[in-house]
Length: 433
Image 1 (cartoon, rainbow, N blue to C red):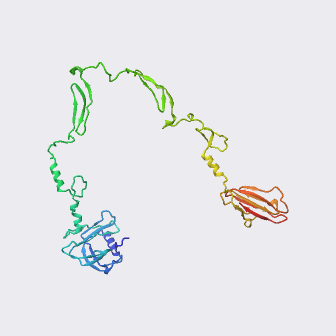
Image 2: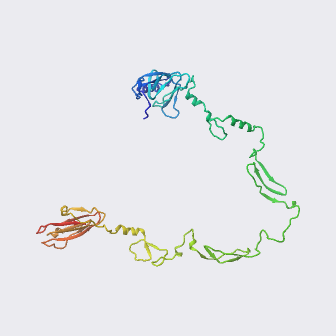
């Protein structure tokens, strides 16, 4: 929020509600100014009077805001000869009640008869309703205040000294008005010259030669198309040349050879104009092709020893050496490849592993498990990797120990279950890589 603003008082809201309810208009308001007792007061809705009033006067203008909804505009001017006090607060009174109070930037108002020292305040008041009627006032000011002058007079520097500016808010200089006067054409006068006729005229040709009648207004040149000649009106004798070249003929005096070269070559062919000819093309230079598509049949086949067009193969089962694998199938290989960090370093997890517990490979790579058991009841031995379950068909040794290794796919679950035999040693070690 701005440091300086205004608000309705609680009494103001009540007054406005009463005015709306009784269909009564807001009018005859007064604006009070105060010095805030030395500081800018904060607007307060509970306030019933200014902190310290120093001057009060009626508004010069009161109207609804032309664009802001629910707002009114109050305009008041303190003239030159009123002053000698600080202004830090203001209030709007209606019917003796403070309906609005606001804060202002501190300003000392001097009283003077020989200098321009008016003080103008033009606040917008949010009355919180568009139903409030306002008796709009526009009182004449006894003094021509600075603000009134700014609104009603135009500075000399804003006078336009040309006839090309398109501005409805600025006047033209007397010099330019004289130019208009000196060059004006009276409404009943004829111009000495013009770029266009007021009434277009039709120009036609008749007699020995006729032509299409054409409209002409002087704004552009016109050409009249002739339509016929009356030979009976010819005079004089037309001379006929017996040597030289005719403007046109059915055959050339000397036959010419027409050939094709460059990107396309063809058989040179004689032409004398007596009939149409067709030139047989013999060769196309492929290096000069700049548009279109060359059929595959015109391209050589690629091989391990020759460049050319190659056919794509979208499988991983072909043994062809003349076809190329698609990017999709190469990606399949890349996704399934075993890279140089496919397995990690060995970790001894013996202390954290128990029989029958399910574990998960946390890596996006295979996990190798190497483990050793002592005497085990083979009937109760089970190894489960994902959905694969393995139970041993063999008898495990009753003494000593045995070791085995299995691979767990990425992110898969795995479980080993065993039960001690007659010689209960159990788990010897469990390493994961």
